[in-house]
Length: 221
Image 1: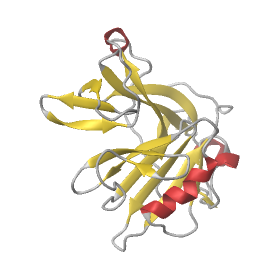
Image 2 (image 1 turned 180 degrees about the vertical axis):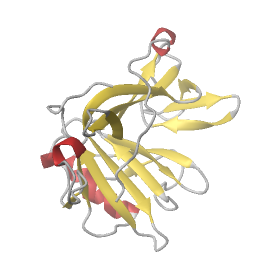
Image 3 (image 1 turned 90 degrees about the vertical axis):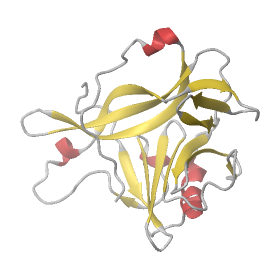
């Protein structure tokens, strides 16, 4: 693990009120950096579905409406990440994280635990290593332009919101870890942020880009 107290801080903002999935998307979308697109996935009792959010905020998915039955959603645009977790009433907690606080939507600052007695500087999550984690299955051309099929013998085919790379058989998810430091100088992975999907060839899959994490938590409250 590598970091320092001068590393970039992972800022976190929670929506002031519980939101439905579509409302959390509308809350998050306006801050998308120019030239970037929002992609991510939803989880429901039926399936995990990847999606893309168009410039006008419309949700694009290969099959159906991924927001309708979602109980969890994670979206990212390279600089920021949206996390939404549904509660039984259909609403949910929405949290946006990113290194630039000006790019985050309005809400309550939940960047760090501010309980009395906490060393705020040490408890602030700061940028650490970048990780690449392979997705199961091999990349194949999808019948729909702008999408890539991920398929395997023991899994259902998954549609990923990225153009078919043409070269490279595997797809990885790139994430950045954020670390905190205790009073003795020990570092722990407090959080991670999803950045992008990227294709890898066989040679790249044999190279470890960073040490593996042993602990990670996400800010959802």
